Structure formats: C-alpha cells, structure tokens
Length: 192
Image (cartoon, rainbow, N blue to C red; front, side, top):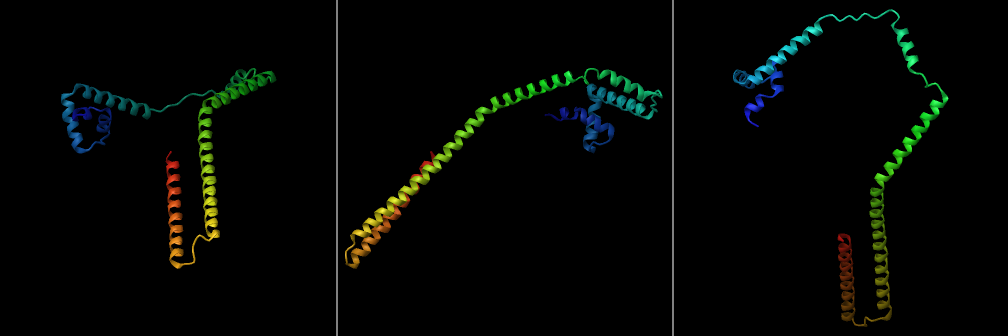
C-alpha cells in the first residue's frame, strides 16, 4: 500500500476533523488535500455531516403524546392478539414446535453420525490395541517365568563356580535381550 493510498483512507479524514491525527500525518494530509479532489470532497461531506448532526442534536425534540396514549396502545395490542387465546391455536403451535424440534434432532443426528461412528471406531481400536498389548505382555512374562523356572529346576548349572557364574551371566544376558526385544516390538506396534 502506498503512502497516498494510506492518506486517502476515510478514517484519516475523520481523525483529521476530530484533531486525532499525528502531527506528521496531519501535515501530510493537508498537502494531499490540495492535490486530491476526491479527498477534499470527502472532507467537505464529513464536515457537512458533522454540522447537521450537531444541529440535530442541539435542537429540542418534543414529541406530543396524547393523554390517553397508554390506553390506545393497550387496545391495539389486545386486538392484534386475536386467536392466541384459543386452545386449538395453542395445540397447533405446540404440534408445530414438536415437529420442528424432532426435525432439528433428526438433522443433527444425521450430520453428527459420521463423526460419532468414526470416534467410536478410533476409541475401540485403541482399547483393543491396549488390551492386546497387555495380554501379550502378560503372556511373554509368564513364558519367561516358566522358562526360568524350568532351567533352575533341572539343575543345568553344574557344581563348579565358573560354570555357575557363566550360567548366571547367560541368564542375565538372556533377560536383558528379551526385555529389549519386547520393548522394540511394542515401540513398532505403537508407531503402526
């Protein structure tokens, strides 16, 4: 936006009339008004409007109200309310309201059914995924415990201390590798 386009804005002319412009913009607008007939015309129109508004607000405004004004309004209001006091009119209005309410609920239900079904499907997928993860983790833990119990009960570790230490190190290594494999497996399942 160029500087002349910015100066030509109507808000700037209104601020100029009210004296709210910055001094630099004020002087730039005064120079611009000498060259731009459109802005000068807009300035004249706004000044004329402000004068007319001041005159309208300054003049007293008295509206003559007849002494029986409230009674006239009440009579007209009662005559305009014909048919509302009839019980058939109330029943018909209630039926229309019920029909419109049911139609609104039906349209809302139709519009939101896709999002509800999609959200339910996503929720069910997550719940079954977590249940599958938990059952598989429990199964793997039970299988590992059974394997350790079998190895320990058979006495595969001989009576020598070196073999016992080597067997214990192999057991620790196997547990570490197994837990690392399980963690990697579950990480790839969460990514999928």
